[in-house]
Length: 366
Ligand code: PMP
Image (cartoon, rainbow, N blue to C red):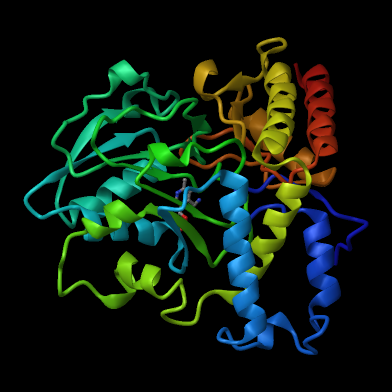
């Protein structure tokens, strides 16, 4: 088994690499939490210690992302996929429609679930160009009477990232930020609801962070048949403790938040992320041997998708990369090629090592 001193470069799309200091602290305290004498895995979620973990994690998220006081921060189970259903179940009146901006596979999935609940209008789709682009504001066909507008700030599979927050007037904006949450400054007040599965940038799998505006929560569809666990208001009233929350995942996320604050918060990590992505894209563009999937103006800082001249070369690249300790580089089958996921915790040396490898591979196979 790999140890802390012999870790591969993990380019996986999620669950993904976590900061080493976080893993080391969790490992050190796993068997017995100082001052408590038992593992975080064994404690009651109603006990003082876990209550403190939950409150501190929320406070750190508020500080990190500048979450205003009139927003709730919730920790929910069910993955980001459950949010595809919870959002329309709570906020799509059955006689109205919501606008969905479709920039890849994850926004398509959100549409599929919303259609089971109510009306959906596609405000934009990048499908014709195999989801290689994000729309400009002027490309969006927004309905001023929509229940809300939903978009995906970063499409994990296609590597397409919004560089702006769509303006939606008075229509509430919902964002799936699962793969770029806390990778750059986040303009919370422009949104009514933001959600992210933790397992890419902010923690392990098992927990979803939801940031929702109180005012919108009050306007929720009042459906008495809505199952309790799918009701945001119940989770908000019970400070994410209606049932047993994903305690361990929240604890690790809390450590990740502390790590992010210690390296300069969101502006600090954004600068690092820009540097890492710029190095990789510069290599992709250097000779034309590699081809980026996403258009240049919407290239993801998190998921760098690229092709090689042939599928045979792609298979060879993936195999040789794996042999030198680069894990998880093979792209999703719908895009093909490679995907280097370089989330917050992915080390800069790993990017340099991949760039050197790409250069060498090209010179041997060009
Ligand atoms: N949205 C995006 C942008 C994602 O990348 C993913 C997972 N890769 C999901 C939603 C679904 O997340 P989960 O597996 O936590 O349901």
